[in-house]
Image 1 (tube, rainbow, N blue to C red):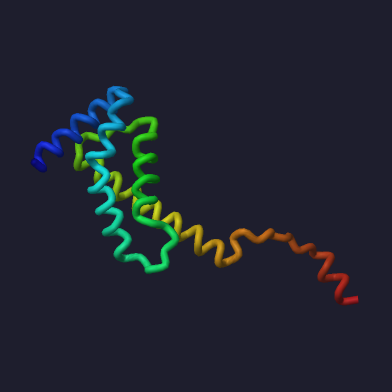
Image 2: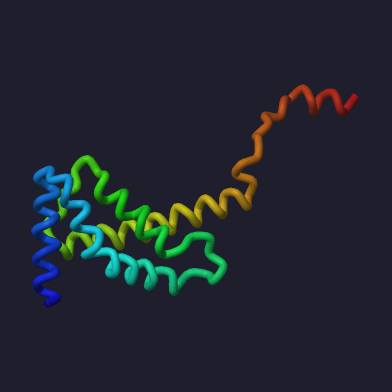
Length: 122
């Protein structure tokens, strides 16, 4: 049964590569649970008050993968490896944005003028 599913995913990815727009509708139900399990495994190492949820990560990554100009996956294994990498990158980018905002990333930067220092010494 698992081998049939792997074959189905590989065939659907080939259809997607050939431009079959209906392939997306067939792909998501087959890969969703495995993508969700993969995201859940990545979240086990995260802090409990994380602002992202595994389901949101799955949806974002799936959209990124299938909306690529060159969605060229060799087979099921290649698809899931790229998906895992995309999930890790998404979590890393999210963490960087959170850390930047904690360090004043959204503050307005003001250029100090050398004339200000000169006028205070008068």
